Image (spheres, rainbow, N blue to C red):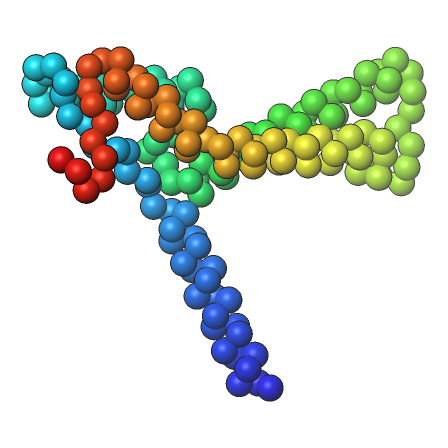
Length: 156
């Protein structure tokens, strides 16, 4: 039984290491080819400019891995949700209602903060899952609008 557990533990550790390693790599963007007579310098500038602009518009960082983008969205939206939940529950407290419960966390305000953080975590995760495809579509549209063709993998 110990041998089976040892094998299972190694398998789980290998899967976790693999998933973290894949999540930590930056996904390359598709190759582009100038459709007009853009120089190599112009092409590099347009690639960088479209990365920056589309990253700003979609909220996805192409310089970070999908895992890093997930952590960024998770923490941002969790904090925003907690702040929103706490703010909503503080209005009645500020109007004269008392905070009940043995501690702050067991109070309605604490419950609202925890609920808001949970809702924010769900929102951040969903935005993260769709972030890379949204960014890539926007980046491709930006590059095509500047006169570049997207080169398929394996085809010149």
